[in-house]
Image 1 (tube, helix red, strand yellow):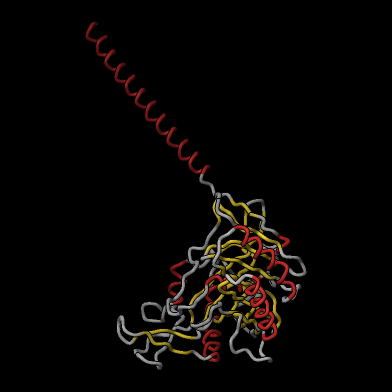
Image 2: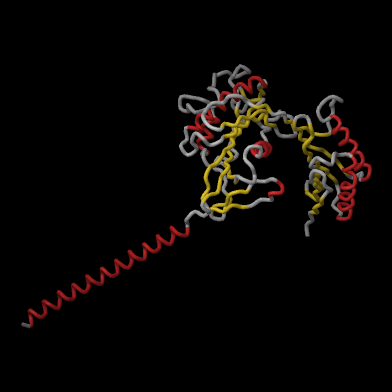
Length: 387
């Protein structure tokens, strides 16, 4: 009887230990599942729309999980055009997009449908290993008979509709193609750099062909589909010696399908004042004269001003905006205030008050003050001091 009772005690102990083990394992599993569930819930994607100053006609933008949504493909360019101005390119796309995608209706989002690898392949040369390359294959020539790089950069902008709270649906897209007017190359590795010119007619022909391929590829993307409006903007890079960026020269709005029927030409120019060789009949000649007179006035008042330049933006031959930079050689707070006040009183005498104007005052490359005037308004001034 004692032996039988001892055997039962051992079995009971084993059963108890097994039960305890089950409880421990089960508890760990339950705890792990709770942790996974908690992690999933905290990393759930949350979308927030940031309202910009809509009185300025700017788009609302997208924030995801507390961070501004950027494009993985932003800024990718073929490094053959040294004067490619990415900011000018982006501003041009943004301005033209407003004509088709209202800032009151749509939410702006940096491109999310074309990956960095995709755009990089498209901007490369066509080859047996990269059949998606938009630039022509290398023909082996080392002179001006070579095949140049025609397209420099490609930019995607998305325009979204907000539905059901945080959900955003693609409602429109702008694709910009930045085309080269010159292409640089070397005949030997690390050798002298030569410049190959590209005529406007050749640039337009090559750009139209590339745009057709891009539209077909976008339409074949199931996430974009056939009926999303796509605005295609053609942009000409500035010449090598230009102090301003390039400008768009044509656009096409594809409401559906993959065919480009007819381009709409755009007459936009960016000029730098003072111009040395402007004629009385050229675009901006009168504005250049007004700027030179303004420059003379402020230099006579403040001899320590080292230079003044302006970037003027024209649409269909009419001035639509101007950015002026004034460089001084002093830092005195009283002098900065006196100069800025004088500029605010003098500028209206020389410039059209129906055109937005921004004047930035620098001293030894440090921004000291900003004056801005919207269409028909007085100059507002911001002082920037270091305390």
